[in-house]
Image (cartoon, rainbow, N blue to C red):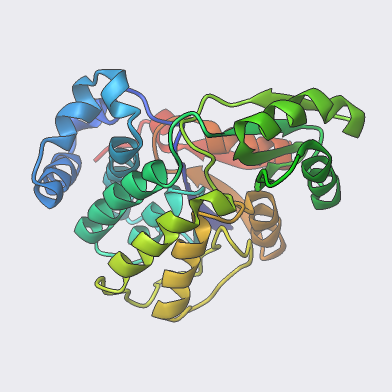
Length: 305
């Protein structure tokens, strides 16, 4: 059996995530403390107590989700459970790289804080947004809808291919609104998402510049297992440090190729999937991709430490 550990991204957060494990696992407690130390502030208090308004600030959400995912992964590792491949959705790619030994956890905490700040500041509030497209998941249809819904110098681009029948677009609010209204003409349904910025499109290029500078100061070690980068959606073995940095920089302004990534993992023999982190978002995407998939989540399994 080939097992993939998959790590969720933004949107799966909830106040109190990880709290069930604080009293059960010293590893979880230590992970929360390490995150606080890395940032020089009590991120753990925001995770455990909120309020939700603070937790959903992108600069907090990103390191918070990373912290919970790494805490859970450490519990699994201590029990001798290891993956054959890792992948993370958007922000979750950082968790995957920590799990694979490429990124130091403290470095990843600081990088995701900076990533959140850079992504939010790249586009003023109220300028950009995102929309989910249901039953429209081919690149041709998504690109055609984007072209039809834009006017002038507006940006509207694919932001992700999440699973069968589900894609995401990002860009200027006016173009997003048109795309939602025109989705039926392309055989689908459009739904504007409640987000604070147009993530994973070219409007986020300035965030990539800031992230690139920070990544140059961080050591990237060899990966212990293959991983599937968001920007390629391909099974990747032993990438160079420069390739990992490039993938993480490009990721903020290019679409998340999660559906191609799942296909690549299935083609390489993945038969078991474990979502390592808060919530059940990725379990839903895997189930939509393969109705008969052996998929579970750490939070639902009742692991003992």
